[in-house]
Amino acid sequence: MNANVLALLLRPAPGQNSVLALPVVAFGVVTTLVLTVIGGAQSFWGWTDELAPVYQALAAIALVLLVVPLVSLGGAAARLSARRRDERLSTLRLLGVSPAGVTVATVAESVLVAGAGALVGVLGHLAISPLVGMIPFRGEPLGFGAVFLSPLHIVAVFGGVLVLAAGSAIIGLRRVVISPLGVRMRSSVSSVHWIRAVIAAGAVAIAFVLIKVFPSVGSLVATIAVLAGVFGAVLAVLNIVGPWVLKVSASRQLRRAEQPERLLAARIVLDSPKTAWRQVGGIAMASFMAVFAGTGVALLDVMGGEGATASDIALADDIRTGLVITLIGSFLMVAASVGVNQASDVLDQRELHRSLHHLGMPLETVDRARRRAIMSPLLVTAIGSALCAAVVVFPLVGIALITAPLSLLTIAAVVAVGIGVVWASTWATRPLLTGAFQAA
Image (cartoon, rainbow, N blue to C red; front, side, top):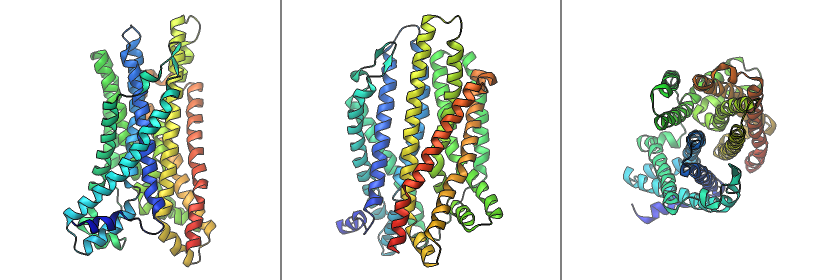
């Protein structure tokens, strides 16, 4: 493939610089949070006293609860500019460029964009590590040296981001190589199958059994590894079943729609359930973590009751600190996910918005439909994710802690804040929609 073809792909189209910048921002946020989360967790693994396994187990669980959603966000970041890239690649295929040439061009662009974002993320990790090092555990701050990753670990995470970007690019190439004209004419249909629900139900059932049985038969280290792996697997399964759930919900709303914005909102979700899920997937992760936070708060209330020793109170304080950190990380992940995905979706749907404008549909109607397509699935997403987390946590803590008033209050508060973040981001991205209408 000659250099002119690569230059054609990498040169931003007019008005598309913001689309190209979005994945850079997303990769930067992902890299910063992943490095910081891993750096914070590593500080506990140097402890060797009798309470060290407790801290290490909690750190491993928190690490999985945060890193899995962040990897999912990284995958979404790799697809943020996919529509622009798909159209350009389909043009190159129609002009006779070979599949190999298209592959090289795509991977080159994706890796360059991810590399720029990851570099920003490394600098972000360096900037916030001193603040993270001031967080106290066991009565004293962790320290900068304990939370800042070694160069080898930083290079490993940096390389992982590049591999994730390249892999997502190659996977996304399949429909361009197979049907370039279909991509160009927007005739591809995004479909999700009910088999996703079967896979999800099976995975949650297996997770329940493993958590119920393994702690009584396995060693401590093996139990920690299994618990962390199970929690990560269930989080990943939520991303599999989520689009199918939104498709079913939108289909029902479409049949009952009596107003233009409701009809348009349902059609937006059905047009691409996977895209719709990426808009609200952050809430699913936050809701999942809210159950852990709620049961943790209820457990701390029990630990700090009458008869608690000084070591119990100290451990409870540290667990409370860890819960706060995990929730802050969760909210940062939600804000990054919904903000970047919504901005990208508005930019990618500019042609649709212009077409609706030319057909005489007011800006307010389109904006209400866009916001409804995001906010309407939130309740289903939040409740479904919380129920999955409750099933997984039940063998560990029992129903009493899950349904304790303090636990339910914490879960409701966390979910409410997450939904508030999504709602605020829908208003923050309105100027992009207005710009699309003005350009029409």
